[in-house]
Image (tube, rainbow, N blue to C red):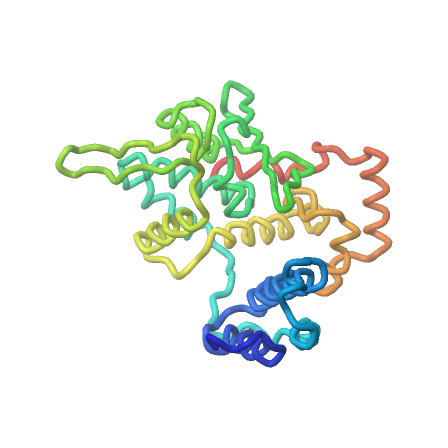
Length: 311
């Protein structure tokens, strides 16, 4: 495709290649198309608004480029679903979560303590991977002699969860174990650690307390623990799926995870929920929204946000 002018057919050929040959998801192709459209619109703006560019191009050439750009903007993403061989999310059983924790506890380095805290926190609050990675020490608010912790989470679009999740029991203890190593100085809650040195019996060294783990680093950490535990493929988002499934199963109310997981405006999400199985009626949604606006619903209405104390 190199050297070819950007046309509608070229864009559609490229998107088809992403899905069929590179096994990318339809949503990945859609994001790629959005990026290409932005680039094409930027070219059009230059040809129309930039006097220097306009003066250098003959009118006929400029007209051809604009015509090609307008047509390229009509390119459509390929239809279809993710290939069957593609990775899919799944539910994590308590045995699998315990196996992950066990391999972390068997690792007597600082990384073992950090990874155990990240895994139990992800399981306890159902946060997205970038939300876990982006946590700061200041996002933890300890109470009850430091056996209970509120976790201040900023989700997608810099939105704060309407109800702050509370971590207690083992999850809180694992966080305390990590903080006893990391310290409570300002900065990233979960930081990078150098490899432990077997010759020096070192448990590793903390690096750049001001630098958060990247989501790629988080993925590598989980892959390592998954392989050590002998489990099937899993991702950080599977902890979120597990949290939602458990919440719905226990409380039999889909509204709970709107607040718990910061999915955004309830009315904005109504269409999405209907597409996934008409989980809530429009009437119930409007009633809940009215209750929220009237401040009739508070944190005490959501006991499931106080996480599994004895896990």
